[in-house]
Image (tube, rainbow, N blue to C red; front, side, top):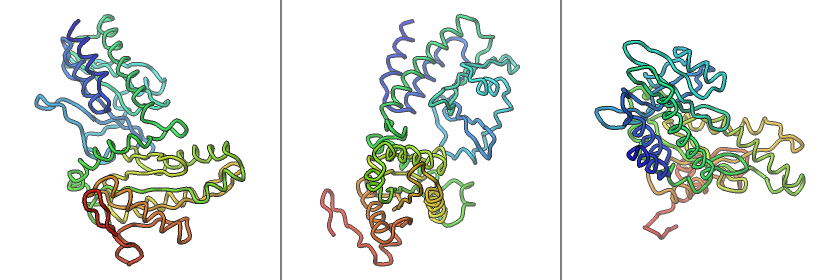
Length: 342
C-alpha cells in the first residue's frame, strides 16, 4: 500500500498534463498482473470517431506520439472496440472486454467539458475482480479529479479557452517538437512549402463599440461565441488562448505557409458570416508569424505588429509579418538580449 500512496502523492505533484498522464500510467503499471497500460486519444475525423495510442511504454521508457492524429498509422475506428464505443455513447464510466490470448482489457474514459478526448487502457492476464476494479477506479478518479483542477486553473473562466499564463509552457512544448514533426515523410504532401508552427494574434474589430452600444453582457456573449467559432475553425492539436479583453492567440501546428493563410482567412470569413444575437455582424483582424525561432516575447511582438497593420489598413483581414517586412510596409525589429533596436 505504501508504494501506491507514494505514487499518488507524486502524481498530484505535477503541473503538466503529459507528466501527470505518465505518472498515472506508471502507478497503474506497477500493480501486479498488469500486462500493459496506455493512454489513448479519442478524436473525430470526417465525422468518424477514432482512437490512437498517445502515451505508452516502449523499450522500458514512456513515449508519446508527436504525429498528427489524422495521419497517424496507428489510428483505428472506434467501432473496432464496440465495448468502448458503447461506453462513450452512453456516457459510461468504464468498459471491459476479453480480447483473447489471456488479455483482459479495461477502458476508463476521461470526461472533460462533456467530451471524451482521452481514455486510459489497462490490460491484464486475468479477468478483473471486483477488488481490482475498485482499486483501478479509485486511482483513476484521483487522476481525473486532479486533472479537472489543473484544467480549471489553466482556463479562462468566461470562454473556457486556455488563459494567458499557460501560453509560455504550451508554446515551449509545441516549439520543441515542431522541427521533428515538420520533417516527417508523410507530411511532405502538404502544399506551399515546409511545415512549421505559426502564431496568430486575433483581435475583434471595434469591440469597444459593442460594449458601449449593447452593454457588457452582450459583449461577453460575443466573446463566448467567438471562442466557439475558434474551436470549430482549428484542429484539436492546435492551441487557442484568450489573452484578455477581445484578444486571442492561436498556435497552429505542422502547417505550410500557404495552408496557414487559408486556415486563418477561413476563420476570418467564418466570423464575418456569423450572426451574433442582437449585435449582428462583427469582424476580426489577424496578424501571424512563424514561431520557428526567437523567444515568445519577440514572436508575439511580430504578430502584434502584423495585427496592428491590419487594423490600421482596413481591418477584417489577415496579415503575415514576413510579407509585410519584405514589402517594406513594416520594419523588422532587431533584438539584442533585453534591448529592442528599431
